[in-house]
Amino acid sequence: MTNGEIWRLSATELTVLTKKGDLSAEEVVKDALARMHQVNPELNAVVEDLGAEAMERASALDRSRRDGALAGPLHGVPVTIKVNVDQKDHATTNGVVALKDVIAPDDAPVVSNLHKAGAIVIGRTNTPEFSFRADTDNSLHGRTHNPWGRHISPGGSSGGAGAAVMAGIGALGHGNDIGGSLRFPAAANGAVTVKPGLGRVPAWNPSQKAERGMLAQSMSVQGVITRTAADLHLSMPSLIEPDLRDPFHVHLPWRGNMQDGPIKVAFTKNTFGYALHPEVDKALDTARDALIDAEYLVEEIDPPDVFECGRLGYRALMGEVLTLMKGDIEAVGSQTIRDIFEVYFQEFPPIVGDDLIQALAQRSHHAREWSLFLQDYPLVLSPFLPQPFFKPDRDTEGAEGVHEVLGCAVYSYAMNFLGLPAASVPARLAELPNGPQPINIQIAARCWREDMAVDAAAAIEERVGQMAPILWEQMSN
Image (cartoon, rainbow, N blue to C red; front, side, top):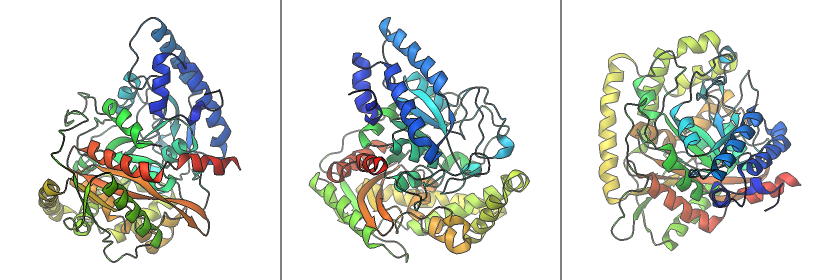
């Protein structure tokens, strides 16, 4: 592998070479930064270039390795960090102009764990205002563009991470997910991710002035976006390492117990009245066939009511947002984000007061129904979105736009409300009128069995192939 091509390597491939000494961390980071400087001006995925300190850290890691220190599991792997998470001495802007000078006093647990594993942060990635859109644009950092073309949104809120990693800017892109913010960018860009379950990855921002609401605590999770499922198996064990600053972290190994016999998969195409696009239908069939060939037992059966559960969860979350965030949104948000939230409140009428307490109580009913179902079917294969990914700014187009972007995404935010892990993996490259576009599907899993979801994603990837090489060929033309 020559200079100018190192950036193409996955994290799994990189660590084999860096640990053996065939590649130095400096070589890896230098090539990653060159790729970033080449493609990021067109994408605006990375909004803070950390090249200087990344090279210093790479040099230090190389010296440490030469001195005989044990290399970490992510030794020399270039990564990006989303700007809504604390990284010491850098601004945690959350895409908001008023927060541009909020300098983090320390690293968040996810950043600390990546550092401990030997990863090297090369830049910080874009997010929409307050990290609360499925698209990525804001008045502070500007719009992020999808590397597949400007006719497709890059997704959100981890849109910068998804666009960066698929364009070859770092092998891993940190992101987070309260209603789909890892899976939306994965689907938009043809990447792979797993939304971890409740308590799996420790989380906290040292810069925060107040604690988050109960639903934000229980629905929001930290993770990474990758180009290949194998990189999730490589990186997630480091992310789930405990941190005492998160008192609700669940310390379990990444790999759970082996299942007896073939794993049963519930397969559903139910879109609850939303039209299922033919390309999404084909992607689901391909994913099903890939799992069957990989000796999973796939049965077409609907899981418990995800529509009622998802809508209840997001309406409850909107109630919490109305109570705890609306003042900040009105005070420092742009007119765009204020208008979007008004439509959110129409699409998902906030549940407040005594009704919110009842909704939170009902959450355990839905979680129990899913827990019992997943006892028989440890995995659920479903659509992520019923249609191919939407265009940029679709959520600014009133009720119809928000309905297409979030209203139909019940398989996404229901998993956050339930606290269940869910992977996203491309299962088809659709040839649409505006150009090629990846189509991702979702695989939900039992509580704390992210590894099973990622195994299934790997089986689908084995059949379909990775999207990144096709994208890079398109970008070079």
